Image (cartoon, rainbow, N blue to C red; front, top):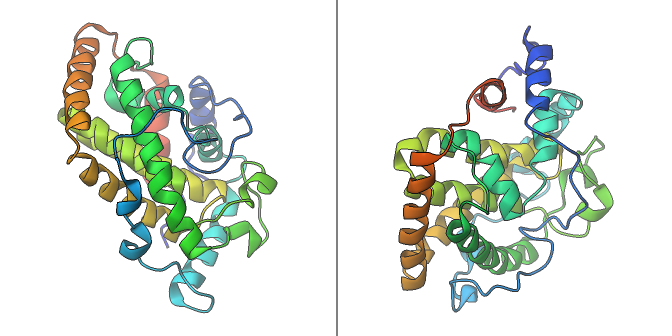
Length: 275
């Protein structure tokens, strides 16, 4: 297991102060899937049920298996992150709405993003979110994997009661974070490293939070890759990607870069995996 540097860094207090500027307010109560409720906007996939991820993903770890025990070990080890800057980021990453995601990926993109300046991109992500929900939920129901805090005791960064109402595997949060990251990478390939690192850290936040097992966020990455690959077969998605790219290019050309203590603090937090 990698040594946890978040607890021992001599700059921890400074990082915490800088990260507070990012606006890590406590999240509003939300359902733990990709969205609180199914979006009113129809997604791009006319038949999302045709993408049967329960058949594609590895079966969730079974009690007594090596993967099952690895999940337990990671959950227990990462409980020591409670109260650290990384815990604060995980708490902020609970929020899944498109405006939150645009904000979360702003440092990675190098420009402040919001729905007001990127309406085409925001609309695209809302539709993709709907597709993600319809693809992910059947896989969750097929695996019926318990969340880690139902197996071992430990702190969680959001309501355990709400989380316990849904299954663990695959992680909807990790799926959504990787989906947004993959789409953003296509829109701005020159920012690929930063964007994909932020996508990984968004998924890692679910392990830090205690809401998901490590295996669930790993499955979320596979899930997201399948969703985005399938979306590319849809002409409407391809057309909207062209429009979103033009919109983002214009913002990047005219918008003020996101720099300074906020982004430096975020980068410090996410460079190393927390497990």
